[in-house]
View 1 (spheres, rainbow, N blue to C red):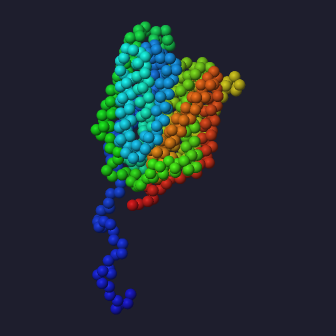
View 2 (cartoon, rainbow, N blue to C red):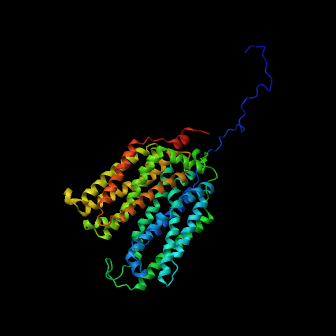
Length: 462
């Protein structure tokens, strides 16, 4: 500058004035609250109870037939109400997007309370009692869309980026654990009728009915307590978001659906998730029938299913915690999981065809291969859900997960529908399982991953 130039006070004012006065302390952009674990616990307990109620009748089907005069078709329909309850999923996704997690979860918990109460009404007329039980199972199934899809939304809303995958794993897998515990709670609480496997003492019909009624009363009591807890305290979101992604603007409901259906990368990874998880759900439902030619009892088949689910839950939480520590590795984790699932499914399928393959078919090999299939596929669920959110961000988490869980239920329904036509020989189910794992592995290998939400949290500062 020349020494003769002067400036006025107005000219020395900055052109861009900060919206807030400068201070010595930085504004708080994000914060995590200790209450997030309470919110996750309440949501997870609802998921546990929803899975437990859904699987009430399968493990005690002999006793239920003895007391309520259920047929085998009735037992199958009671299980089927779970996927049927998922049909109005678009309505629940709209409610979650427009009204928040609290409103949708309250509605789902109300359906669970009402359904559990209907099942426990002690009517003497068995015809009406059976209809009440079917109605209760359907109402419990209507809670499925929110319970199964809202885990990633809860984790994004309440948890920091380095805890999101762990929170998603806990919230999404606890329902599986509830259905697995039904294999233990039911047979322990309800005795089998005289003359059946597992019956060592004579029990009359009234005593068995009283024990079933006790289980139903206990379940409705626990669900009612959870409903009251959610009613009095379950905020939709914290006062201050835990991350930049949690505070960012999302697409509208209609725009989100259009974006998902037109995104080829999302459709590719959605098929990679929904085909094997849908097939394994239907396959596990008739596992005792599949293992019967291999001389595996119904009790042993139940324990195989139990440990498959429990192992998948434990391994899934462990892998999600690993994904939180080493972020940006979701695709690699899934590739390794489905490589293991493909090998385990192939091992199990060939072992069941021991007359052709001459592989040793022992209880140990069947247990090991079958449990490994369940562990690898079930534990992939939370990793898949996190990858969906990263791929289609800024589509809301609830809508994204609602679409993929609907597709998974759709493939389960298709498999069970085909099963009604080919019920005599079930080895084709094993080949479907193996093929679905290999199909998913190939899609994962060609999938091009992206981490838009993670980039926003890590590299973008506000």
